[in-house]
Each structure stands twice: as C-alpha cells, then as structure tokens.
Image 1 (cartoon, rainbow, N blue to C red):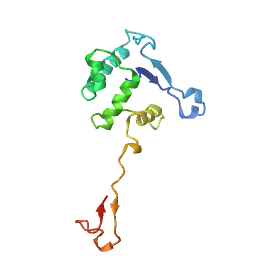
Image 2: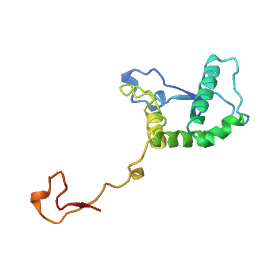
Image 3: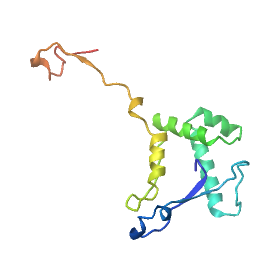
Length: 152
C-alpha cells in the first residue's frame, strides 16, 4: 500500500531453483509514476488497493500530525512521508505493522526484511540500561532494599 505495487512471485518447482531468472518476482506498479493516477482504473485490485491506502492514511492521521495535515488538506503524502509516519507510529506504539510472507517457498521475504529495517525500532533507538554503582559488598547484592548498590 505504501508503494502501490503488486509483487507476483513465480510458481517455481524446487528442481528449477538453480535458475535465478525463473525465481525473480515480477513487480507491477498500480499508479503512474509521473501523475500518480491508476494505470488501469478498471482493475479491481487497483481499486481495492486505493481504498486500503485511503484507510491507512486515515488511520495514520489519527496518530501522526504530519499525515493529519495531508488528510485534512485532502492531499496525498509521498511514499517516504508515509513510511516515516508508519515508523513514528510504530516506535510510539500507536500502530502495529502486519505483513505476510511464505518463508518455506522464499516468497515475500525481501519486502518483509525491508519493512523490518524501515519500520521497527533499532537497538540504537533504545535507552541504555540503568547503571548500578556497586561498592563490593556481596551480602547486600540481592536484597530488595538495594543494600549498598545505588542507581546512578
């Protein structure tokens, strides 16, 4: 929905997996890259994808101010702005991205990995763990009151 494209994975038998060309997915854009108009307005997949994208933008407008501005002004956010809003909503725990793939057949794994990198928090986004100043007395190490261990 973010990129408005269809990825069609070929139905390849396991014996043909040695030929990379037969395993490459076909990517079909749903919108014209210049005008952002549907390439085939009569295609039911394109119509359903446009409705789902509108629902996504509407839902993101509830939790993200930048997308709310686009929504209220009835403008279309760019793909980069939509991805950034999804990331902010995910990091703030206001949205939960859901995707599907078939790992055993190797279908959809690359888009899932791209989404993990784009949307989910990095270990660098975490605060470091709280440090404890310890004075060396092992008797009070596990006590509930903290004993001689003090948080910094």
